[in-house]
Image (cartoon, rainbow, N blue to C red; front, side, top):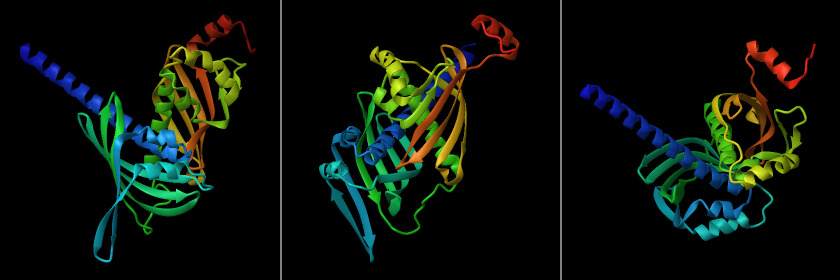
Length: 293
């Protein structure tokens, strides 16, 4: 019996450790995505908030048998983001390799940098991050740059599916944490939210009017996706998704449309419905007092 208990304890502790590592990796990826979302939005404050105060930037420059290390200044980088510019600074990430050890993490990302729709250069970013006050911050970025053999589209949709999975997961988490900027920042200005009531067809502005009292209380709603399917349109500019959600109403279904524009994915439409087992539908019809016969 003691041996059995020891095995169970070991399995549970190992499971917890793996789960904690997975959560850390999701948070690290979210920090990196905030950096590039901020660059695309020319939001100096958002970018500055993901860096440690003493963060450093390096670029490895090679050519004609020489390799040099060029050191950049974080302040210059932030000022370049804030300075007026017509073309969007769009750094697209194709892959993530993340390793953690306690409060220290490294992340290796392949990227291509676009000025608007024009491909500028590509390479890899090597991030060092640390966890401070439950938040992952960037200590250092070292990158490489080249103008040849650069990806301009994902080689397959598996990486893009993971990216949108994370986007939608973080979107739901933002509601649970009452982070209005993160939540409504992922809805397009022309976005439409369809609620469970037949009267609830809201523009972004009307949805905010409905949701604001909940966000002001410090917690809106806590929806967790248990299953999700995503399909992509031509050239990966649109994505359609549907998901099953664990909610206070029971199992709900969310579905919607995402559009890639100006270097970022935004929700154009979201439709929330309550699922009803077939053998309970008559009870539901009676409860709401409507019969469609």
